[in-house]
Amino acid sequence: MKLKRTRKERTCHECKKTILKNESYGQRSITLGSKQDGESESFDGDYLVVHQMRIKVDICQECAA
Image 1 (cartoon, rainbow, N blue to C red):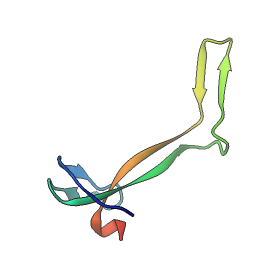
Image 2 (image 1 turned 180 degrees about the vertical axis):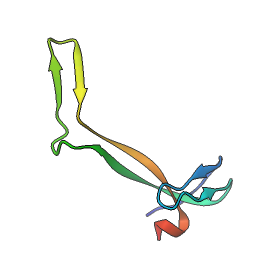
Image 3 (image 1 turned 45 degrees about the horizontal axis):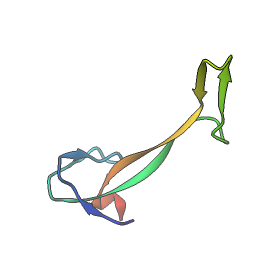
Image 4 (image 1 turned 180 degrees about the horizontal axis):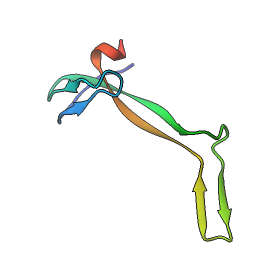
């Protein structure tokens, strides 16, 4: 995993440790939701329901190794 330096204080998603300014951190994407294919549903063209999405979370240097 490629690490980069943070410009602001962050929290590690894995161990909940604080990542201070100028420390190295990585990012990992996690999946939220239960649908396997990532489909969305539309009802009468007005509503859009997405069942699955991916977001990036911050990981400290120790957890990234």
